[in-house]
Image (cartoon, rainbow, N blue to C red):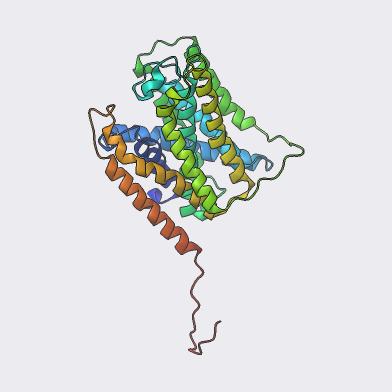
Length: 345
């Protein structure tokens, strides 16, 4: 059992729900650590992230011209829509408690949908629930890069548990499915299916990505995380003109999603070193860790309040340990001098 939980698949099973649910403040520690809720989060986020990773690995192995990271992000968006739109019904909800001021139809609603919340939720699922855990596992287990982390049997079990949990979540929600809900289900299926059949387009004349330093990547990731966290609070007052406000909110949210998911995937696919991945993980998670204590004042947490300050502290300690392990592995082995001459070997 200990060997499994230290394997790439075992690390991914608990890293994905901890980052996507606990660190973001979606669930406080008391609710997250309740055994049924924790088991559900492991299935939805852990198995979902593993399926995204292994499906992307299989698609890349079947066609070498497909880069891994754009494939991974496409699968992540598709599975994220299954979770947020199909199982939880957030896409068509106008009274979801976590929406806050964005629940007002004047702030980013379009027909029966809430695209602002949808794009932010899918970005969080794709980046914090899939991309960052994959980077962390690859940093901790560099020998697992480019390989599938589940066996054939494990893949079947993960897919069965994920699908069964989504179906049970839909049946237990008591929602009356209307045409918008069925369209969300169709879109989620199309995204996953489209990721499997996707092929990169050859763009003539595109300039190659300018190589960025790891420090710049880290600061960029921190700024992106801060913007994603502040946008739901700041968005309703972004413009004084009520008519243009929904369009401004939706357009900027769409740009934020593209910048976070698509641009990051292209940059990683263009060639990132482990130092770049470490900087991105550090910048993104450090912001969430520093903002975690503020979640204790959230009125949404009425049953299990408190504990987010400890979560932020543990996240910072975990980042420090990750840095130590990566640097220790990257350090050259010390030269030995068995003869005692003092000359380097």
